[in-house]
Image 1 (cartoon, rainbow, N blue to C red):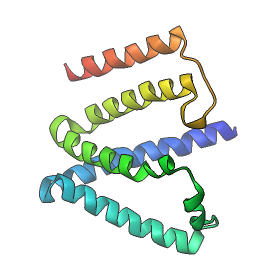
Image 2: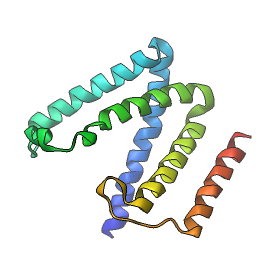
Image 3: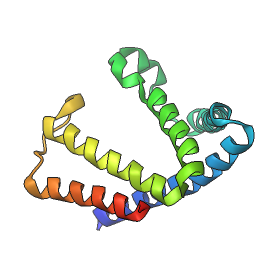
Length: 144
């Protein structure tokens, strides 16, 4: 039951990404790609700042103790949002998100297979490879 609840919460994250894609795409179209990404991150940073002040329970100063590679999340997020703003205006929300999910699953499978970034290993099986190939075919057919 808990797994289902977590999956539903993750699905809400998917809803947020879909809406965010279109909202940011419109913003980027009006003020520019990089500028739209900047405003999106600025507002997100302000919201997270207040969440940290009022609800944060961790130790933000421990950031100095983490491996430096764990600090690239913001860079990757900026690249992601910029690509979404660009792509949504060229191919639409659905095609953009299908491509994003394909990229996430394909790279996620590689990360899991090799246990990268300190994770457990979950080998890529033939079935997993076929499912990734089917996603590629789906993306192709959807955009044909």
